[in-house]
Structures are given as C-alpha cells and as structure tokens.
Image (cartoon, rainbow, N blue to C red; front, side, top):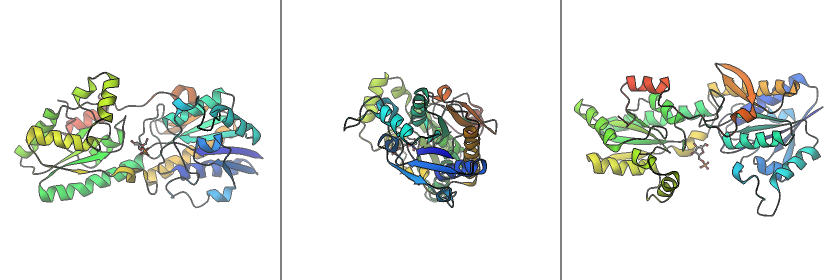
Length: 358
Ligand code: F6P
C-alpha cells in the first residue's frame, strides 16, 4: 500500500488535473494498492489537515479538464515562517499532517514559490516531489512548465482576433498578456500572432522607440499595428529607478494596468489613437492543449517512477526534450527570465519585430 499526498498550489493553469492523472496512472501501474490524500486549496489544506481521500477512479476522465479538482491558493513562501491569523505554526502543522496520515510522499504541483516551500519541507525531512506548473514558464531548471503552451495558444488566439479588427479599422492595438516578472508568454504569443512590437519586463522600452516602430510601419503603408505587451513591461526610465521607488511608482500608477499607461504615452508622444485588449485570466482557463496533455502526462508518469525508486527531494523537469529530475534545492529561489541574448529574441528582431529598445 502506498499513501501519497498531493496538492496544487499557486495560480492555477491548464493541465493540473492531467498531471495528477499521470501520477496516479503511473502509481497504479507500479503498485496494487494506492491511497491518494488530496489536500484542498494547496498548502492551506496541508496546514489545516483538510483533505479528500481519493481513489484512482477519481482521476479518470480529467485529462482534458481545466482548473484543479483539489482547488488552489497562494500561500507565499516568505510568510511560511509566520503563523496563520489564528496562530498556527505553518511548517509544524504541515509536518504533523504528513506524519499523522503516515504518508510515503508528498507531490507538489506548483510554480516558483510553491517549489520553494516544497524544498523547505524536503529539508525538514519529508519525502517530497515537485512537478513544474505555471503558465509563465519561469521555473528555473526546466525548459518548459506545464500550462505554458496552453496559455500561449490562448494569448495567440487573442492577438489573432485583434489582428482582423485592427486591420479593418487601421488601428494600433495593445494586447496585454500575462507575466508580471517574465515575458515568455508574451514573446511566444507575440511571434505566433505576428505582433509588430513586443514589450517585455526583461527588455525595458523607450516610448520614442515604440513610436519610431509605429511610424515606420505607417510609412510603409501598413495602416495598423499590434503591440504585445507583458503585464510587467517597464520603461527604461522606470527600470533605472531604485527597486523600492520603482515598486512604489507602479503601485501608485493611475492606470488599471501597464497597457493603459503605454497607450497614453503613445498618444502623447506620437499622437496615435490606441485600443487595448486584455485577455487576462482566460489565459489560465479551459482545457490543456495537446502539447500540455503530453507533457503533463509524461511528468506525472515520471514522478510515479521517482516514488517507486524512493528518489525524493526532486523536481521533475524537461531538459532537451527529455523528462528528467533535478534537486528541488537547485531550482528553489531562482527565476528563469527571457534573456535579451536568447536566440528567440534575436530571431524575432530578424523578423523585424521591435522590442521598443533600439
Ligand atoms: O503566475 C501566474 C500568473 O497567471 C501571472 O502570469 C499573473 O500575473 C498572475 O498569475 C495573476 O495572478 P492572480 O491569479 O492572483 O490574479
């Protein structure tokens, strides 16, 4: 009999269910008897001993189902050493739940912050395996997280829709795409959707360069332009501010989000009228695409084998198209950013896409 705890933590994404299904299918191939303790709403369930005892059948029919059958919540890593509002010591409580249920392993489906907590629990002596989730694809150590491709598909479809209406009306459009700290989704969807300008947190823009790129297009007789902008895109001027000041400025800006601010800057600088589209959380919703179904199923099956091999404290990752594993401690606390030197950025520049920086 194997007793496995499982939880989905942080912002949800497509393929959380598909990944859990992969783990359980793999375990059922390896063991005659498996009990799954599904903690509800991420680490909150582990802290509060709130779980569902699930059977392998509960993981049937969920390959294509978006969201998570366990629910999710954000429990920031930086607050893990602070008690809950009703005085519970979080780390102690999580260890107690694990021990009380006599678990063989805890499987954590989560992004950067969640895997930091997974690493902490592993260092505290629990058997933990991490599975790399997030639409942002910013988890260090894996070439790809599950959820990313599905989000890119949705963001691309949004740009496609905007393309046709922008062309009919000869308009400039900003499409704001998820990613506060990293721009992987915006970069990929921008290229896939044929955006003319891509603005990323990692490549600060100069509004004059953005306008120069817009003017170049109109001189070439192109009546419309599409700007794919990441939620965390930042101007050169703001990027040069000390971190505290920059955060304050962003927190106090009068605009609902960055696209509205850039729209105003464009209007002031080059007079173009700009429309805005924000697909928002649609990017995290719906069914996983085929790529994510394959990736998450492979990740899940691999995690089951790690459990069989009693290889704990590991994060399942994709490296050069192969599913493998690295130490949770190796990834914890590091983000995978877009580098301006990445070949994909260079390729995009060769296609004539502007990053608003030249
Ligand atoms: O981390 C995933 C993510 O979707 C980011 O891209 C986005 O900025 C953020 O979560 C949105 O978070 P929330 O669900 O709290 O609105």
